[in-house]
Length: 639
Image 1 (cartoon, rainbow, N blue to C red):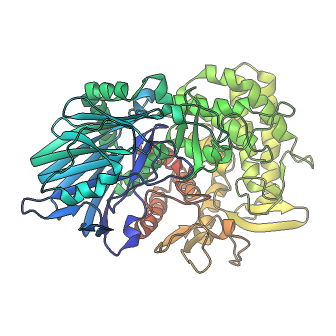
Image 2 (tube, rainbow, N blue to C red; image 1 turned 45 degrees about the vertical axis):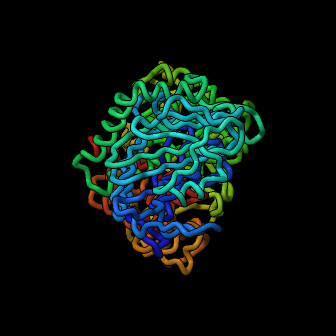
Image 3 (spheres, helix red, strand yellow; image 1 turned 60 degrees about the vertical axis):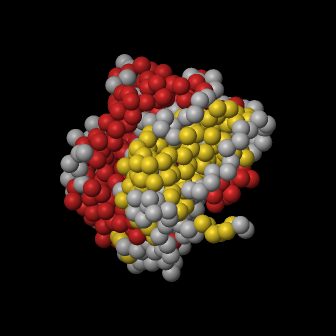
């Protein structure tokens, strides 16, 4: 994905790809030359900007800071650039500064099946150009600079350390207060060359001269500062493998050729494929978000934040139901950890599955949601199928049985369909209630999955019971909710809500995708998807679509709920969620409508390109978890 940052065009610099390791921290590289949402120092709630500067003096003596626009300080003005070209192809980010003729490339380490090397607290940075180039980076903590030769410097503090190892550069340190004096005098007299011997606020400085092409290691180690939001020290997964920053930098320096080769192989697997460009770019964008939003602690506990700046919680069940499709096959260890955490907090009294982990892995927020049990069962089945792991089914089976019993108890009128209370499922600000199509299809999908797992484990009686319940639930769903063209939103007594829900048939596509076949007749499914196209496909209208949209976002969207009379009942109904739009595209493809599926993906992507939010999809918070369902669609296109 290529974007161009330009002075005076704010929409061009709103989001950027992320460099770093899974659960290890990193930073966002923006198309304006700045570095945002830094997690290196474990500042998850504030997501502060990272103080990195590149300053270039060309062969004619013209000095520029490689950021859009000028930088004004009390002692002078530093000229910037007018244009930056940024390319994000996971896990590589490339920036080019045409006026300076300088390219800076960031490579994060990512290798499917390799949790250790995909969670390294380090990246490779390659710089190319002519003239003189200076790189500056700040350690947030008061620290002591320690050099290891002319090419490697550590900024060490009790909290941890930050380091640069640049084989072809002169690497030194300077006090933070001297940052802009150093920039101001760069290219002339480099006045700060004194060794530093006391702890305080410092920066690392690296300088290249002439025609340069160098690849340096930027590494860090702040595992000991990683705490949950209740003050418990939880550490970082990389702390299990590396005792300090020196160990990290030594390891990456020693193995960087092999590590980079694996990352490049993964990148080329995406961008060297023959798949449509829009699919490659949409998939890559969510991989960057996945790395940014992940916690991976010292005990190996894993979770993805529902949204940025610690929005909502970790490993939100109803959102993970969608988003975990991105990494379930790439890194099974992470998915297994997340699902085991969810199982650990299943309520003992009735088997209810929890909602999310509120900034700690030690407790959950609530059990109220009525879609969690069935989503949990479907995720267990999915994981076992994709991993071909019967032992995982055996391990999770007691939790599955309890979750199914709890879900069955939600049927209050004996029709084998659960009744849902107001806002008690993933559409948690939309007050439909009664017998709802969303929870009905999840229940049917869970029944079908539970029956298959029971038979595989030799529990024939339980399997027969689930199969009988499925037939009853299927008949009741069609009788109560099918209107001849689509499945209506809900029935509550005599009241029928004629809304057409974009992901009404979530249980159906889960089962089809996992080889169980549909839970509803094909003709009804196709008709419902056609109705979504007719009723839910809208032009973005920011006169009322205000909760999730961004200035400049235009084009076609697919709202959560469409009505024949075009009514608006609430923002979660009349606005789009890109995760639900991708789920709709997935089901279109499953039903043989690939061209429409691609059109949905293109409509989403084009909207985000226009408003500068390709790398930040907003739902309940930015960098949202649910759009990572693009991973399931990607796998289908790759077959």
